[in-house]
Structure formats: C-alpha cells, structure tokens
Image (cartoon, rainbow, N blue to C red; front, side):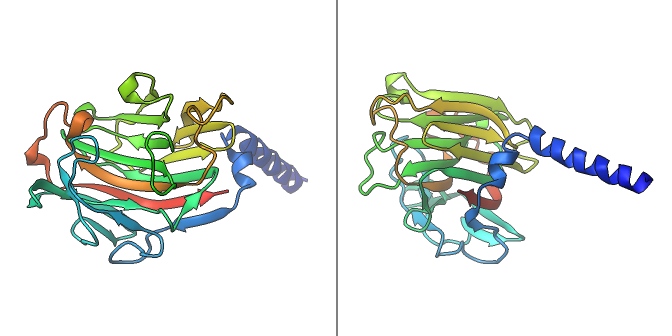
Length: 265
C-alpha cells in the first residue's frame, strides 16, 4: 500500500512538473530537426556551417576581420564550438574573429531554437546569436532580423533581444527590443532561445521569456517572419554600438563557447 501511494505521488508530481515548466507541453510536441552537439574536434561541420568572410565593417563600423576556416578563430574542441577573437592585423583590420552561418544548410520556417553558450567579457566585445532571412540577395531590414542574444562588453550582464523589419528598426527609432540581466553570462553557460510561429516571436533565457513581438497582420514591412531564416553566431569588435566606450586591447583573446545548437519544429 505504501509503495502504491509513493507511485501515485510520483505520477502526480510528474504531471504537475509538465504543467509548471514554461513551454514544456509545447516542446514535447516538437521534434528535433537540426542540431550540432559539437562532439567532434577540428573545424565546424561543413555540412552545417559556412562562413561570412571579410573586414568591411558589416554596416556597423566594426573593427574585426572574419576569417574563413581558421582554427584559431573557429574550432570544435572539448565538446564545444569556440569562436575566438584575437588582437592581430588581417587585411588592415586590427582583430580577427569568425562569423558562422547555417544558410543553405539550416534554414527554418517557425520552430524553437536553443543555443547553450558562454559569452566573452570585456569592453569592445560584441557577441551575437541571431537570425536573418534566407532570401538571396538579402534585403535588410525588409527580409527581417531576429536577435536572440546580443551583449556589448561595456554593459556587462545586459543581454538584448530585438527584431528588425522595414517598419521597426533602430536607425529610424522604432526598433522593438528588450533587455534582461544575466550577470554571470561570461562565467556560466546559459540557454538562449527563440520560439517563433506565425503569430509571435518570443526570446527566452534559460526558458524564461523576456521579449515578445506579435504579428500585427498589416503587411510585410511589419512582419517579414513568414519565410525561412538561418542562424548566425559571431563575435564583433567595436562598432557603432559595441565600441561606444572604446575597445580594451588588454582583454584579448576572448571566446564565445557554444555547447550545442538545437532546432525543434
């Protein structure tokens, strides 16, 4: 009888747990459709990742040069993807880094994306986990951008989520954004997530939502998020936002480490 009561208590506890955990029921209905667990060594898996390459400032007056297939800037080791920014001159740029993209190898319409990461630290760093429309050629901001995680080193612990569309973006003062505090973001791994469907874009940290953008059902200038998008991972240096307090050269090299990327639909 005692064993039966104990079993009943366990079943009730499990049911309560599935109800109380944010997103637990919805997540259980989804299937893992794409992932990289980084359980290998060497360059990032070329069937899943490509590189943006160059040092043209990327529209933000950034100072880094993004390299192509350089282990010093992007490598998989000890179960993690490491993106590393170094103080070194490449093509007249004072820093080297990497920007990995899934375009053409991972493009999704709706779903849940989880990225477990530990962020770099220091003034001048600007790591990002984000999405762009997979149109070719991309027209920005018309084709949409979703920032799952941005962090500027001069404001340590402030993690930002945003969307950019033709109607809502920062240079015209209409950007939709939110900030949450992750004080130990450079010491501890956290899960940065996007939950996206036809009605809402929601961004979460450790399964706690803090930013939501809803489809207002007007036109594509407000909601371009009805087509495939791809994931980008990078560390920028300086720039119009990341460099507002300068760049502290004494901090380099700096790393963003990613434990896994998982996409559910």
